[in-house]
Length: 223
Image (cartoon, rainbow, N blue to C red):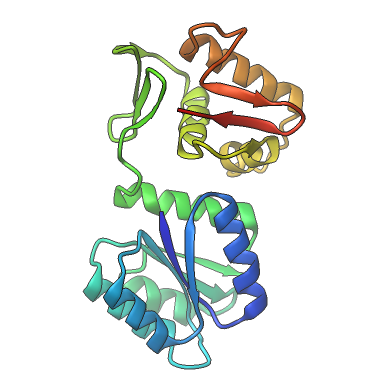
C-alpha cells in the first residue's frame, strides 16, 4: 500500500512516516502543494493524508488534484481540532475522513485501515500455505475447504496475512485488533487467541507452519 503524506511539520512527518512504515505501508512525504501535485501526476497511491495548511499552497488544492488524478483514492485530512471550517470544506471536496491534531497513533491507523477497506484497497486474496483469505467475501479456506472463524479470529488472521513476512509484535496486535475499544489485552489472552486460530488453520497446531512464534518478540507469517 502506497500512502502520500503531505505535511510541512518535520516532527509530524517523522512520527507519521515511522508509524505507517511500521505497519507495512510505503510512504512518500512532501511538504509543498506543488510537490504533492507533481507526485500525484506521476505515481499511483492507495491513500493520501493531507494537512490543510502548508507553507506553500494548501491541502484543498492537493485534494482537488488527487480527485482529478485518482478519483477512487481515499483522502484523509489532518486538521486542527477546533478548525470546523477546514473539516467541513475537506469533506465537501470529497475527503472520506479527517483526523484532528494532535492525533492518537492507534486512532489514525484505524481511520487509515477503514478508509482503505471502504475504497476496496487490499481486497486481493491473501494466502499462506494452503490457507486463503478473501477480504471481498470475508471467507477463509484451507486446502479448498471453508474454515469458519469468529469475528475476532478473522480480524487476527487478516492482520497477520496483511503483515506476511514481517514480525508482528503483541503490541502491533493490540493496536490493530483492539484499538477501537481502547482496551488492554494481556499477553496471555493474545496467546489464547493465537492458539484458537492455529487450531483452525494449521495442519499441526502444536507445530505451526503458518502463524509461527518468534520467541520473545511476537509472530510471523511466512509463505
